[in-house]
Length: 268
Image (cartoon, rainbow, N blue to C red):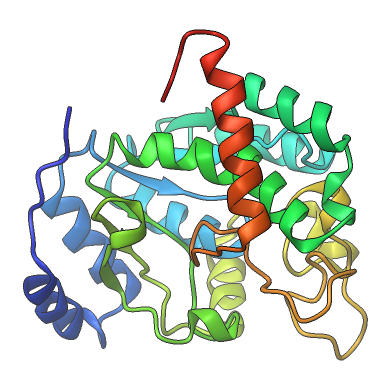
């Protein structure tokens, strides 16, 4: 079913202004009232911010859709935690998104299983195949999605609004209820409401992604320093929230998608 734009940029801008000083629960309530329950979802990697949004939304609408991407390279601890979360929120509609196996096979055939260590474009390629493309397929079926983005996480996120039109993903409405929260706010909520915590936080992780691309941080390091730590002067983004384009990445992406689908008669 094609998405019907419910708001234009001006309308969303006005709503964002109205919601900017509102509590996250108010933002979530607005979204749950505004969008059809089958056309809105929480998208989360089960990190602290996403878990806060899940807990808040579940209190209002237990059958909320919750999507998470299994890249195929996640730590075992993440899979175990996912089962714990499912048990804690039994009425939520959990969906695991997987990459297209043909695209993964073609990427690995061309560049090896650990291509992400070779260069920034190779790392972006891997993120795109394993994480971004599965999410884009899901967003195409939604009118709105919740994220756990905060302005204080990284420079590229400093200007996010609580509600915005996601023009990078065909105009889906992106809802960031925790935009003006701090890390301290997030953890205070988790402690107060006993929200499940990913076990890797206790081991010094502050941002949890794929196993080969995430490490605990050292004292004094930025919270996202544990992501793709071998790169220098590269964006600490996978491309979902911040579109990233480099010539080599774009060319390889086209080659992989084209090869993976055309030989099966599924041109996308």
